[in-house]
Length: 220
Image 1 (tube, helix red, strand yellow):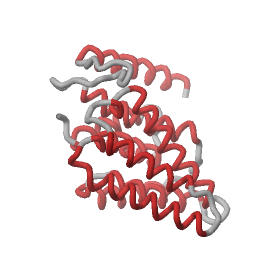
Image 2 (spheres, helix red, strand yellow):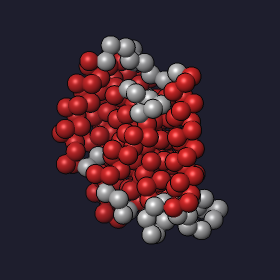
Image 3 (tube, helix red, strand yellow):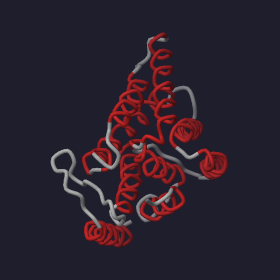
Image 4 (tube, helix red, strand yellow):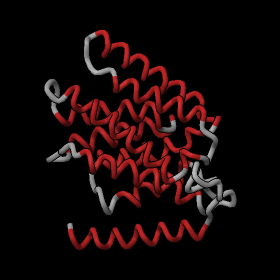
């Protein structure tokens, strides 16, 4: 099974041709890291996600603000807790669902603070929260330093929900692609099919990604 030391750089490689932006690259890291939350060894991080979701939901409810931001984290935690490893959450449908959930959380967080804080501050706070929930603790400090510095030094920042979804999706897809090259493979179309797919499917995804990256390069 590939470790985070392989998944993280591969997520950056797959995302960089489409989103050469520090904030969006950080979202890809969250995507590739959160996929394995369906593994029992990630139970502590699932609990953290669940508790942060409850705290956010309660605080927002008390102040008569949309509690959906916290509810999204609670729902994700529950789904990961009941999911079988390399089952639904590793499937095409699963990574779409994860990307939608994370994009909805990010968008809600942005809309909640857009009239109060600057965009860069919002993006930094969002990245800190998601980083604390999702990333390996060995990576967290260096990630925070690089991410905060990168966002601060980027001259122009925007919030585009389609780009955010794309970054999360590519991060998730990069993780699943690497897992296709393992002996266990991945149930790409779970829950519709329990069939495991392997290296050939991984090669198809990589070829499709390379073609799209080349097309994007010429039409940027």
